Amino acid sequence: MPFSVNADISVLVGTWSSGSMKVQTGSGFANPAQTSFTYPNTSGISYSFTETTDGDAWYEISRYRFTSNGSQPNCITAVMNWVHGTYAQADNGSIILTPNGDGYQQIQDPCAAVSNFIENYNDTELLVNGYYTFTDPSLGLALQLYTFDGSPLAPMYQVSSTPNMLPTQQLRNVTPVTTVIQRRGNGVQLSRTAGLPLTLTAAVAVFVLAVSSSLL
Image 1: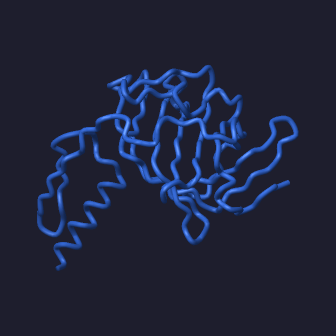
Image 2: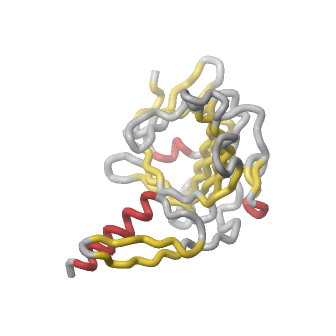
């Protein structure tokens, strides 16, 4: 049974990990200075949250996931993902995760044109429908979170009530993405000139900005 439903956000503080708990935040997973990873024995996710200090509360996420391909069973995609930043609770109980700008991920796909590459990852994420903690008879205190579309994440179990995280500061230099906006008729064209591919969210944001400016 739920132990705490939509409770004070302080119940999130600590480090949580799914499944066998082999994937955990902290220095054993990501090395941002080298833009590298240490591969765990199994896949999973891990979230850590700090208490609010000086007005900011920090989070860190480590994810190691596989995606199968039904039409090509041998084409299994593996993704190692690390990101950290600050979080806040919205009035409706949702949690907004705002990245610090130095996250990254490694994608391995044996069937892709480029089978192994690393790219920046700095997407703002939304956890909706509140959250709740409950007590598992075998694994102890557990946390249930939900993604932006209401889908549940894998239940995570408390590894430590003290967050195990990398330093809450900029940990790697990131080349910013440079975009050029060109007007063509009633639309706009986005041209990437430096950095990594523009995320869908960023592209939509730039598009809305451009259209709004054209209406002024």
